[in-house]
Image (tube, rainbow, N blue to C red; front, side, top):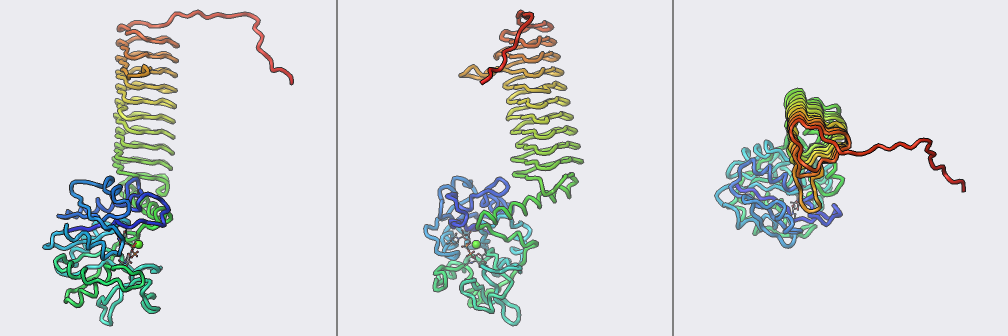
Length: 453
Ligand code: UD1
Ligand code: CA
C-alpha cells in the first residue's frame, strides 16, 4: 500500500510562522503523529506532500522511509495528491491521510483498508452533531454514495446532511492518475477537489464503500489553537484512561500530561499535575507526588518521587527517595536505597547503594560509592572555568555540611570530612580531613542600629 499525507497547507488560523503540521500535540509535531500511525500500517511507499514551510517540514520529520512531494501552490486536495503520484506504486492502493488530523487510530484505518480492498474506493465518513464546514456525503435512494459536496458548493438540502467526509480515503492507484487529471476547479473555491473523485469512480464503475471511525475525535483536524488545545485534552484523556486500564492509580486523570511514552509496573500511583516527557519507565510500586516533571528516566521499583521533583534524565535503582524539590539531570545514576532530598541537584554522577544527599547540595561529574552521607550544602566544584573534572568519593565516606570538593579529587573509603572543609587534595582511606581555622569571639559586641531619618 502507498500512503500519501497531505501537509502543504499554511494554517493561517494558527497565527504562527510555524507550518501548521509542525505544531506539537503531546510534545510531538502533528505530522509526526500521522507518520507514526502510517508506519504501523507498513506502507511500501510513504509520501508527504509539502508546500508552506516545506523545508522546515522535511527537516523535522525527514527519515529514510519518508519521501516528499512538493506542492508549490495550494490548488486543492486533488491537486495535492497529484503531486505525489510519480512517487507511488500503481499496483497497490493508496491511502490518503491529512497531516493536521493527528489522532486517527490504526485500527480504524485498517477497517477502511479491509473494506475497500484492492479495487474499491473507500471513504472514511462520520456522522456529526455540527457538520458546518465539512464536505457532505450525498447518497442516492438506495443508500449508495453519489457524491461529496463541499459546504460552499452545497444547496440547502445537502447542507442538512450530517454524514461528513473526514477526507481520509483509500483508492486504487492505477486509475487515480486519469481521475485526478480529469478534475476541474469550477467550484466555489476554485480548487481541484479530491472529493470529486467519487463521481469519477461511479462513471468508471468502481464501487464506493464507506467506513466509520470508532470515535469521532479520531477524525478531528487542527485549524486553530483552540482545536489544537481540544485535541491535546482528548489525547491526554485517552492516555490517562489507558494508564488506568493498565492498573495505574491516577489521583486525577484530568491532571496528568504524557508527552512521550510512560511505562508503568504494577501498583504505580501518580498524584496530580505531573508531566512526563520523552521515555519514562516507572517500576512496580513507584509513587509520584504532585507537581513533578519527569523526562527520559527509569525509576526503580518501590521508589518515592516526592512533590516538585524535576528529572531531566536519569536512572535509579529500587527503593530510592527523590525530593521533595530534587533535581536529576542527564547522567544521574542512583543505586538502590539512595536518597536525594530538597534542593539537591545531581548531574552526570553515580551514587552508590544507600548513599544520601538530603539537603541543598550539588553533585556533578562524580562517582560516589555506597553508604556515603553527603551533608547539607555540599558542593562538588567540577568546573575550573574551562574544563569539567571528576570527584571520586569511595564507600562509607561521611561528608560534613558545607563542604566543597574541588575536582579532580579523590576521597578514600571511610573518610570523615569535617563540616566547612574545602577538599582540594586527595584524602587517604580512613582519614579525618578538615581545614584549620580559628574561631574568634569578642565579648560585649553591639549590633549596628538603623539610623533615624
Ligand atoms: C477537506 C475536504 C472536505 C472534508 C474536510 C475534512 C476536499 C475538497 N474537502 O476540506 O470534504 O470534510 O477536508 O477536514 O478535499 N491540503 C494540501 N494542499 C492543498 C489543499 C489542502 O496539502 O492544496 C491539505 C491541507 O494542508 C490539509 C488537508 O489537505 O491538511 C485538508 O485541506 P483543507 O483545506 O483543510 O480542506 P477542507 O477545506 O477542510
Ligand atoms: Ca480542514
